[in-house]
Image (cartoon, rainbow, N blue to C red; front, side, top):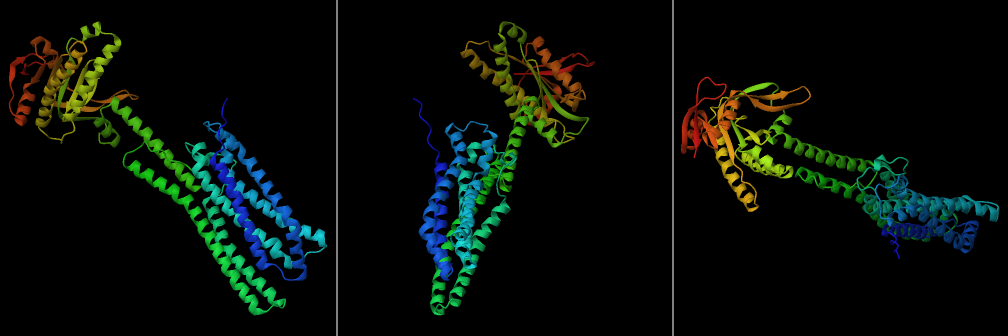
Length: 523
């Protein structure tokens, strides 16, 4: 048997707030009527009739009616929560969530308004006349305290919904985009708050003074009236002071909580944490800011995703320079060291391997080589089948002699052999075929720029230096070597890192070159 989900706590808390606020307003109404009511025989007779006949019937009827109306309005939200809050929430549910604080407060205020209209009407029906000295007990006091009750309900229910309801119904924000809702703006909330904590107490004190004057005019002793006025004013001051502090704290939380959250989110974004998930709590101006921060985080996440994707297609160092505008349009003549790295016997390996195994091998190889290239200060210009074209020193200071780039390229080439050796240890443990390299390195002038069609191009290097490096890599098979370096690169690199052992120092003929190129094979 399926167990029904419990009634959500926010619903019970909302009912409690509505009932407690109206009960408090009923008590304050009774109190203010007692100290502000008319003292004429007709006013006292009407008050006695209201207390003995009307109020015992009217109050239970109003409280039960208000409870039914509030429950009826909130029950679809209760059913939605008991169903597990499926996302996205229906439009009707989203509208009710946004409008609930104002609607619940409005129901209470409307019922107080019914009382304000009914009391003079019942007096006319009962006695056939109505007197202005009844206005305090039948109109002013109920209306003022009813407004105060509605304000308390709105601010507290709004606070409950911001914390307990809105995050479940609007996990991704978007409150400001829901049409047909009833909600106060920040200015509206401040205005209601100002009336509740500013004008209502002043109006009550003014009513006390007017009531005291009426008592003096009716012949009551002035000393007694002044003493009663002082006592009543003290009680009214204490009552509204406590209520004012409570309302101030409730209103302040609707501003400080989201602003603190926004500030925390922005601090985490500034620290590079894009995993933060902002919470949108309202549809007012604060909600617009919250939605804006949510959109900002989403845009930054998308930008980060694009940068990561872009960085897989283009080397991150090139990507960052392209995005920063540091690379001038057209071509640039620079001095750089070019390294070609290729897998020896790849065609046979491809023939003997399954497609999955072949892709796995290439990914392992490229991962190891790319990380090492970056550690050496170079960048991978492109992948060509099983080969890498690597460039060093392209963004060094213009006019440099290329020694640093040659040294970096030579260190990288020797380190590539070491890393393939480590990779082969792992492959050997798994019974997989070992890999071997062919590397050619040359230093000289290159033309660097964005090359391609109008709709698709890439940043790359071209020129004789690139061709020589590629030819040297191709000669490795003929000479039984895995690393061949041009004399130019050798001279520049050893000027920085010192001499290293070479197993071959031959002049070789390269395709496209009229003069032989002296080549060094490193031990």
